[in-house]
Image 1 (cartoon, rainbow over the protein chains, first blue to last red):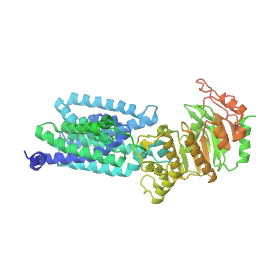
Image 2: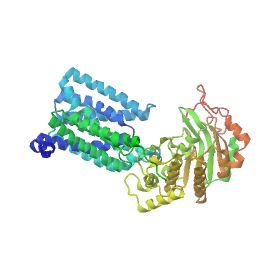
Image 3: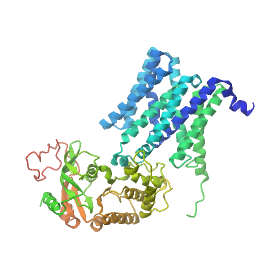
Image 4: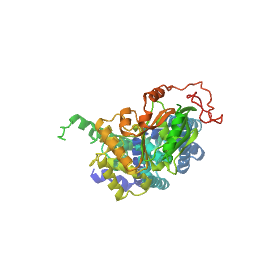
Length: 290
Length: 277
């Protein structure tokens, strides 16, 4: 096989592969920066929680309207926003910390979703919702993915400084009268949007992978935020492309292939990352004179 | 003499306080941590707030920033918006691992001009460099903050305060766990603020430091024990009274009715009572 056949022919030959590629790249553009902020705000597990939280919305839509991307996306979006806002408001009104409230709300949400699907759906449906299928991404889905990626990048650009300050020194932002809560909520809504975008292509469980794995890897390579964003984006984009190729050539499911590729990048970064990777620690450094 | 005498004494000397507390009560779960405190912070002067643990010192600063609502009484800022006050809380809430450069951390002090979306001006960058130089951190602008020691980090936070260019500066235990050199350098920055006519209020623990650098002192033990010139406040008798404050609150405390009688300055016979206002 020539390199062309391995690296590009699948996309040249098949429209569904091209759709899948464009969808994955769009998803990577939105998910990578969101994941990085999740990591920096020590909310790595929040993405996971939220991915479960959108399940019942998607399930209800699926039961009511069948396998309709629009219906399932709207359902998932509503469920996700309800959990974000409810957990956020309960946190501000009571003593409980935000992570505890998110855990409580997403568990209730997840259990409702599983209950709904097992009562009125089938196991095949559940598998589809949980693991998605990137190879079924159609033109309408592409438009949705592109819209989410665009929204994410624009909103992040607008809220970038507020988010950085809210993460670095929330008390400072508060003392300057900057409403950090707005930046925080805008960010959480972006998390939900990207998970909803991701679940059709990768499935609810896998969508988090494209957020967290490139972001966690990026911390091991760069020391400043802009550089980290570039590394995370790069890893997410390459994972999408390489993962699709592996899935095509190996006849493997696409979602797990993409996430495992990102996982490989993560393990590689753990070993080789210039900022705290194991290899550099193991090699040690001759100390400098000053 | 009761502490209320000290208030009147203080008012007489500083009629135009930069910031005034009038009968201020702050509570957690209805239990007062700052109880019926009145007085003014001397404008253009350095005031230390001292007192035992749990005396309400940090809580008072938060209320002055508007971060906490008074349960009773009020903080009068005389037209000063909270964002025009520079506030340095204890370091706990800052994520020192965050991938931010020293220069960017200092430039946050320009928030009043830049806000969420505004441009960082060239003059702000120059002022940031000058501020770093003034705190002894010239040339550190490009370094990430996670490489700094605790002392260097505190210097960077002082540079940020410098950039904020505020008339009123509130510092919550700014020298805790710092070495002598850093403390001395930062005290020099504070002395510079006094020369520029800025008002500084700092929560401090070291009485010697307060005596030699802070002309005014508020001795707080939930109640105001004494407030005025440091030499008159930090007397053995006052300190003994402050240290006699009950550390814990009384779960069965009755509701405080000090103001109900129409006489706002009844003696503090119930300094850990429950508040109903």
